[in-house]
Amino acid sequence: MRIDVVSIFPDYLAPLRLSLLGRAQEDGLLTLTVHDLREFTSDRHRTVDDTPYGGGAGMVMKPEPWALALGRVLAAQTGVSDASVDDGAAGAPAGGARRPVLIVPSPAGQVFTQAMAHELAEEPTLAFACGRYEGIDERVLDWAGEHFDVRPVSLGDYVLNGGEVAVMAMVEAVGRLLPGVVGNPHSLVEESHSDGLLEYPVYTKPASWRGHEVPEVLLSGNHGRIAQWRLEQQLRRTAARRPELLEGADASAYGKAERAVLRELGFEVADGRLRRA
Ligand code: SAM
Image 1 (cartoon, protein in one colour):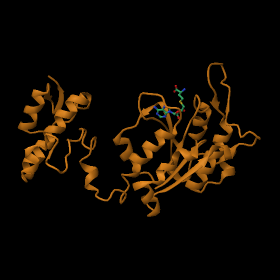
Image 2: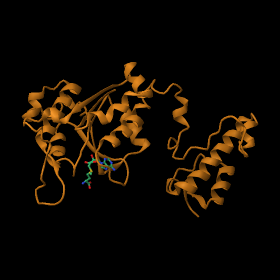
Image 3: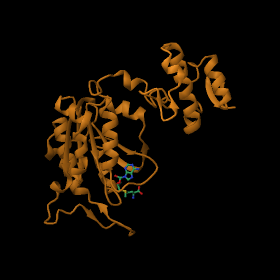
Image 4: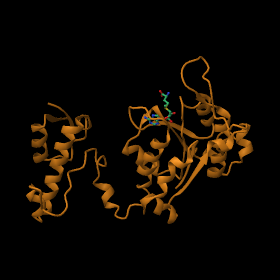
């Protein structure tokens, strides 16, 4: 996969060169390029922001540097020449080809989820436009929509200072799903959110630590009992911490034992789906 990130703080993205994603880049599984938005300004002060039309607090990111930077990204990702993008001549991709995805981090976007991470991991390229100040002039998104599949995406219902932290989270979540990035692909299957539930608690040696014991079942060697215990823990943890994940969930995989636990937790099955009892 090829990923391009545009930011006024390219150094913010440096941690993406570490650990598993760093190795993925060394191994050629991922190409990550970070572009400095200020490189696409033409004035002495390398200005990227201006006052908002209509008044109000803060500054807004100017459209022109963004168009030039995203034109460069589009050229790198698709081969469309910079110049044709600048004057709008490129238009939609020829032959019904899919537009590259451009993610615009925003607290006003669709909330990022594991399902979205899986969907994005299927893309050959991703571009990210990190906003700062009060955000990017809305016309950039309109214009970019002629060339990209533009998706405003939020990390959650809170406000960050800029898009960089959100991009780091999204790139890490997507990057670890790329084939070969995580050594044991099985570890991706049993994680929180992979089956709509939170993950069960995990333990390692020693079996007894400061008066706290590892649950006996995990020492039993009985894989059937362990799997059953883990699923029950998933249900209990999800009901306690994120009950909304259970409401309306598909219950067809749950047998008698799980349904009894769910009843105890205040959920029942109706038409194959879970609802609060
Ligand atoms: N005025 C904007 C609003 O209320 O929607 C918030 C601007 S915020 C201070 C600056 C930038 O941080 C945004 O343009 C966006 O790139 C990023 N950002 C802030 N919160 C975010 C979130 N929850 N998810 C993704 N990006 C976020």
